[in-house]
Image (tube, rainbow over all chains, first blue to last red; front, side):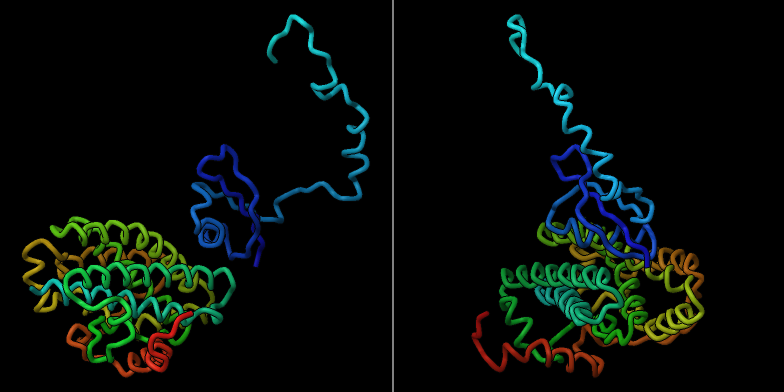
Length: 90
Length: 246
């Protein structure tokens, strides 16, 4: 039985957040189970389910090449720059 | 005068099916479905509490009195609700027939001339609509599934079919309340129910049973042998240890 990832948008949230996973025969049933398991305490007002197999994920062994080059490029962060005196708010 | 027994009867329907659904805890075919069944069970227990709570304000017992301290003969639930649901097909077929009925019945109850019953009807309607969605999906999944699942689901429908008739009968005590617009007219719900059920069964490649047999007696307290066994388990703790607290 395929695995589905569940994303829930909370009442005040603007985006769907990953909350967990479950098994179901198909997407329709996955949606119903997500409702039962992840929103029964009023956690959300919208649900997405997606087959876990359809997610392409970065791999841990790729992490050095994927993410570490960003570590020594502080000029990509806004805080790297001094605020000109003329700018009051940013 | 007859509002109290009518309210208790609706509570009995909800309590008995809630208990039947609870029995699936630990036995459902998959973990996710177990959660779904337990949630549905709690919805039904919640309904029972609303009806019994209202009955209490009408001069009846409290909810524990109704639940734990009546024998089978005093329960007035319809027989359909007390059937054991021996396997998942039987439990699902019964649930679907009940959910399809509840969806229609609660929509009418929401228009009741009695404000409390109207509130309960509105709340139940939202739950029942979802329950019907879920049980209908299972009807299609099992009906239009493998040869074995289709055979067993068709058999489950045949086994339960005669029990549906009670859903559409207004008990003598209920008839005046129907005429006053307090209770929905059950007889009038039959056509819409048949259409809704037939639509799902067609999608499930299942056949609407042709059997004409019918059972009755629930509202008069005349039950199947199954209710007593169920109540023995439900009531054992409370009766063996009066006043016991968690």
